[in-house]
Length: 175
Image (cartoon, rainbow, N blue to C red; front, side, top):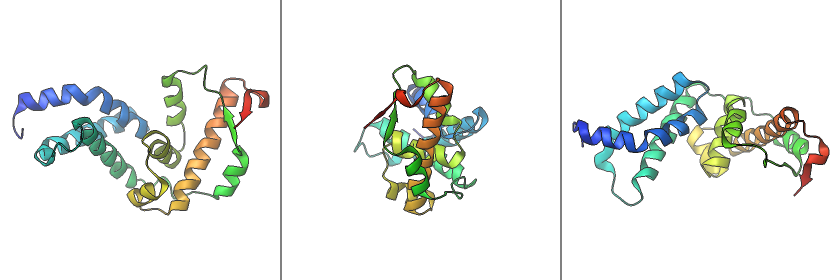
């Protein structure tokens, strides 16, 4: 496919929408998301010959986009101020806020408002399904930092949900 513009366009058209949404989850702004997309598709086009077909093509494309986003974010090191996991876990304990009245777009906007480190680790853990050990290896941080950033992200999201949707403690239920 190297140099085959028609095949590249077809591949791009097939995956661009979903991969752009993925890029936006990691980026703080449209420009960064577009940079991640451009770099990702350059890597995809340059390395398509490495795709072995062991998994669906979308999984391979998705992994390149996630890895490109991580590389982009690693330059900024947004997770260096991790804090103590116990402080965040005590804050949120086992409370869960109901998301029944929210749509996907609203939730993504709330996630984008998180501090960079929290946003990245929340995306990797809660949405992409990576384990904290894997996240730590990907980002070059300790597993404790990953856990702490995730706990902080959850606490901040609970606070945002309560504040933005007028929820009180009765709207929060125990697990």
